[in-house]
Image (cartoon, rainbow, N blue to C red; front, side):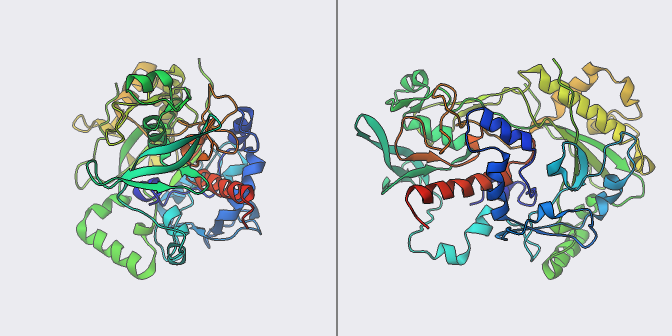
Length: 466
């Protein structure tokens, strides 16, 4: 439970929903009632902010009076990134700890950590002991839903339940719904389950001998993620970094510090600081992430394209849910994304040569370790081809897939309407990242939870539940 937040960046839950323009674009794409101002109350209802004693710049915008705290957010120990964030970078990226209101700036990340210094996710925040004890809730773990069940009602299919198993050849269980089936399987799982259940591109379903319940060509399409390049790495000179935790004794001490006080490096982020930089619109990758040798102290800088134009798709291998689908992200199918990352990498190389980093970075290249590229070369003199080669070798996705069952008005280009109901199907809603009409310019965690809160209000209103 908790999925991405638990397995990846449970600590990395930015306490806002990112750029206002992203959500206003959602509404222009046909998601009526989902603009920034519409979604803001849902964010305020889930977010609490605990300001670090060293921070004075945060304004009350981040901690509204109507905010409750099922997801308390606390700033971590930020000493390692203080010089970088508050340094006078020659590239003139301003410091802005209230970045949700702006479009550019550097800041430390806000960490989703509870008051005991532990990771907090949607599961730990919402599935508390009292909630799990409710008689109307049963959490079935280690189960796989094989298909959604439908009945025809006045010639319109209606979702009535699901079938599931604990193993491919295990006993089959059937769970029926009294009102609705709500699908929350994520950007990969949601379209996969829809298609094996008969909802998706008709041609593909027929090829896999699946009975077509509803032809929706957008199911599994429009897959977008945040392509990242990294990381640009440098050895450091006489400056401690998190690499010291590679020593078992140091790691044991840090673990004990966290266990006793809830503080220290074990309660911090692996990527503790960042910057939002506006890019200029411009008209088969190696997944290897190079690892520094034991004992090397260093820092890493990475860049992500937040609004990629490339999009991929998810297609079926078979008609069986136990056979994983084919995921083709189609990285860099639009050259715009490569140009954006190239500009970002060049900027990182420049930043690494400005105050304060220039005082403790060792720029020497070592052919044994390709991640120490480009050594002492001047970033300004690097060619586009050199940058592109580096990106192709060092790129990966940020594990932020979205938009594979996007929200909109048209059955031809979207899967759900503004009420998150699947087009042409009764009693079936989708509530997860797959309904994003467009990718957002930041981490998707807080927006996903805000969407769930807004959807819960919709459902309660539909059935007059207080």
